[in-house]
Image (cartoon, rainbow, N blue to C red; front, side):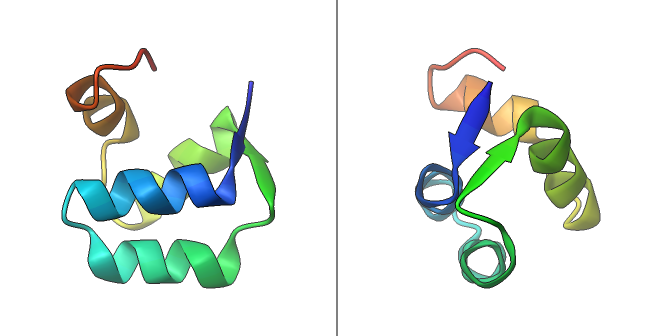
Length: 59
């Protein structure tokens, strides 16, 4: 599954990760896959699955 950079940025902002959202906007490509999303989250000490779950989605 591919994720859009904007979706990731919005998800981060909604969960209070402003600096990380700014970094995502600067560094991520337009579309990323799950492995890239997890790698980005890990590099920022963010558990992506937990955030997605809080938003009512499925990881």
